[in-house]
Amino acid sequence: MVEVSILMATRNGEKHIREAIESLLNQTFSDFELIVCNDHSTDNTVEIITDIMKSDSRVKLFHNTRKAGLTTTLNVGLEKCRGKYVARMDDDDISHFDRIEKEYSFMEANKNIAVVGANINYFDQDGIYGTSNSKINPDKIDIWKGKIFVHPTVMIRMDVIDKIGKYDESDSVIRIEDYDYWCKLYSMGFQGANLQEILLDYREDNNAFKKRNNSRRIRLVKRMQYWVKPMKIRGTVKLRMLYEILKCLVPQKAIQIYHRIRYKK
Image 1: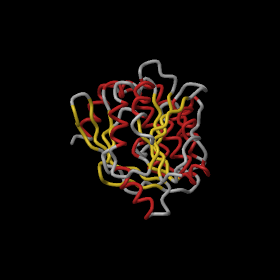
Image 2: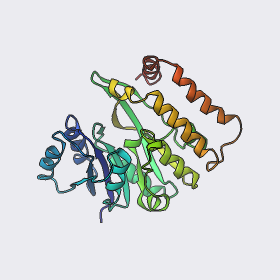
Image 3: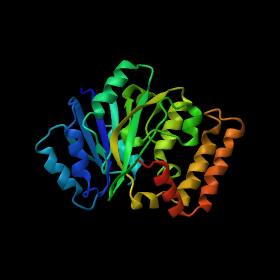
């Protein structure tokens, strides 16, 4: 039994995964296992992970032999986690050296909180260009509106995961699986918090913005509609769905420029 299981899904992550894993192995908190679940990689990702495993037994590699996709891969990895807490991490981000320690200490001291996240640096090929400003205690309206936790910063209680279940594996949540998961968590009465410190560098380059296309926005609005009743969303706040639909009319480049202005460091 370990205190923390860190869950990482990867698919063809050879470019950045070594740096991502090393940022975890160099944490001030050491009582963890790193569960890496490979999603049908065809590059050198598996070889890189296998090489790292030779020098650190905390790293454990598993393979998604089911349907390819992030949520299925995360669920396969969740089945292998043995920790009291599960922390998420992506294969191209960088955790600050004290991230796990600070999140673990917070969760130990705040038994009423189901999940904790943190603020981040946004960076691309040219370096850090912005920082997030997450709400300390987001409520269900914040979550439903999409003001969610930064997925690779979170730490969640395993007993909460046991109660709310795993990630939805349907195509309806592709690239919005984190939104769907936090809506499910809040609809069941759980609460989360965000540490105000910056504890992770989040890769947000041109390739990441290309994935935020209109198909994803339409899926998001459909999922917002799905969660209206379970989360008891009422009144004019439901107009947020119209706001999200109208984004389909805005050029992607303009949204990217706005993002950089909004989060400018």
